[in-house]
Amino acid sequence: MGKSSSSPPPAPDPTVTAQAQSQANADTARLQATLNRVNQVTPYGSVTYTQGAAPMDRNKWIEDQVAAERAKVDAENKRRAAFEYGGNNYNPETMEQMPGSNPAAIPVVFDEAGFRKSLESQPTPTVPGQDQWTMTTTLTPEQQRLLDLTQQAQTTYGETANTLLSNARGTLSQPVDTDWESYRQKALAAQLSRIQPDYDRQQEQLRQRLINSGLTAGSEGWQREMDQQQRGYNDLLLQADLNAGNTVGQGIQQTAALRSMPLNEASALLSGSQVQVPGLQQTPRANVAPTDVMGAYQTQYQGQLAQWNAQQQQQNAALGGLFGLAGVLGGAGIRKWG
Figure (cartoon, rainbow, N blue to C red):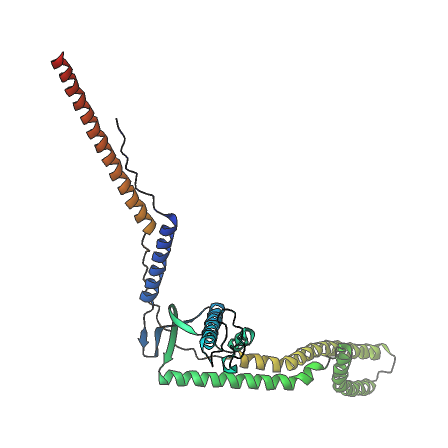
């Protein structure tokens, strides 16, 4: 059985296939971006999308500018070299001045370093950028007015808070007096200054009453009355001591509150309520599946390969039939001549 001389279809070029798939993916991403940039208009304002310009590759732009300027200088020098002044000019190959040449034909020297430096101060040009989008939020005049007032209020809050902090700097820089025992003694002395006169008056009244009742100093009845009054006085002293301790605790709290008051006020100003810019609705997003280019290439190749295999089978079958017919005819001829 003979074999066909035809070759099978070539397999897809992986580089070409990958590039085609990459391009399809990029086109799909751009389509999705375009579909999802939905302009919105609400009673509070609007959001619009525009395609902007993308900056060029600055290094490539500089090199292109240098190459263009160099080509311009070369062209000018060739023009000058070819321009004759009384038959004397510059050699266009070596750019050397021939004897007697006119100074007007002196070649231009390209200062590449200076030219590159001049490009540093120039902005990078832009090119239309299909992949760069700009979202612009525009408020209605009323909402814009509210936003302006909010920002002004926040500025005032910040300035006032800074003033409070500046004023409190002196107080906060002073150490806190932690001599609490001294405070307690002062508080106790203040209470005793009110208790002691009453006790002395009651003590004198008790002595006079006991004398009037016929009791003498040092007697049992006298001493019993005096001890009872002393116990009451001691109870008052204990209560005064407790009150002095409580007063110290309150003083500590008051001192801490006074020191932290400027900080709390400044914090309240800095974190004051803010007017929020009305938000816009989230639009449904469109999802577009990229074209399966690689799969399409593979399917096409498989179909071509299957078609080629079928053709090969047909050719082999046809050749086999011809060889069989030739054998039959050859056998018949041999019998006839035999």
